[in-house]
Image 1 (cartoon, rainbow, N blue to C red):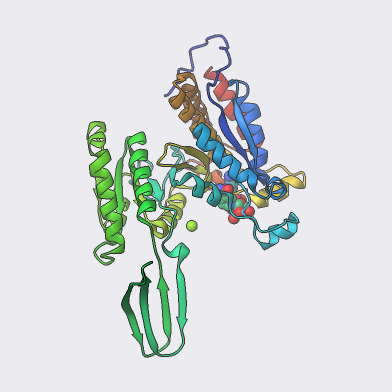
Image 2 (image 1 turned 90 degrees about the vertical axis):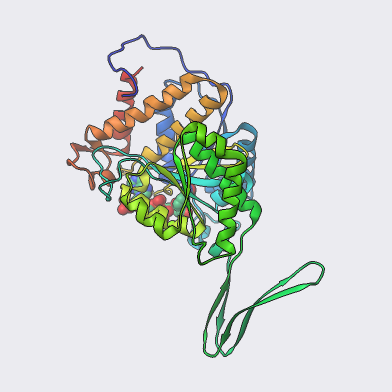
Length: 413
Ligand code: NAP
Ligand code: MG
């Protein structure tokens, strides 16, 4: 128990903040929930100081996406941001919103400016059991977000011929390697990565493991990829030896490298409780596997951590468009606000830690405890009701769920 429900002190003063949070508003159903969370869970207790950036798609379009860049720069200035889910426009959205162009993914833009790594962690409650029985603690996943197959160059070989890697130095010197002599049709692909980006990824992982006091696992296939993956492994080892070895030992945590197939087998047999750092593609696949094995994307926290000490908290899920269409028709929806509430609590806690304002940290703990208590008492949104064991006592709409959390939060003040 994180707080004492029997302590009936008079309503205390509003919690003050020293530094503003960068508040990045978004789209559709998550924007609707954002407003409810602020009104019912935060504003009654905190003299909320935020610097507000409206990333609603209409506003990104009006500002030619400058607002997204401004929001990322603001996080660099203040250190901590909290972000609502945003639409990444596709062709259908360009038409729907009459956009000047198909603006880039805001998450991609912000990530590129902050140079970050994304960490995802399941929110565990007693009545939603992980699909893997022995997982008792959350497995946090850290995914490198640059290069590899996401920026590949591919070629379809139709006729016999020779595929080569050709690297031309700026001084004109050339290095060639034969990939394959094709006697029949086939395919070729090339990928790349950068030492600087891998170092940033390693830094972010070591810093996050230290912050969360958990072991760090890193895995690649360096026995097969003797240059590419070995480079990742070597950079991780260098960063560890030079900057984190002592800190890890003092914190009682370990850095563990193993082959990805060995790691996959060990993770399934483990009880969880580690940070698992993975290259871009491995992280993409494994994060979806972990999210569904732990229950739901709405029960997942997501934070972008930069090696320069900036943090951006968000939900792992999108704008829940289908629920928003119902909402627009005036129908209540049972959309799960937990990931968004935890984005706020995570950001407020980090702000409190950085500013030396323990009241903010305590508030974040109480808010999260109130959410978990609500679900564990059997009151939950429809997505969780499908998984709950024992079955839910009451399946509620979003606003009712937030009201129930607000009642429990009020009891803790
Ligand atoms: P989504 O918003 O994550 O929703 C996909 C489905 O997952 C929903 O239809 C819903 O299933 C379920 N779901 C997700 N979050 C839920 C919640 N909080 N409570 C209950 N159910 C939830 O993904 P999408 O529909 O593919 O994308 C919608 C928009 O979000 C897109 O425009 C995309 O660009 C954007 N997006 C943004 C982010 C981000 O900003 N971080 C991330 C991903 C996608 P049911 O319909 O079965 O109830
Ligand atoms: Mg994926």
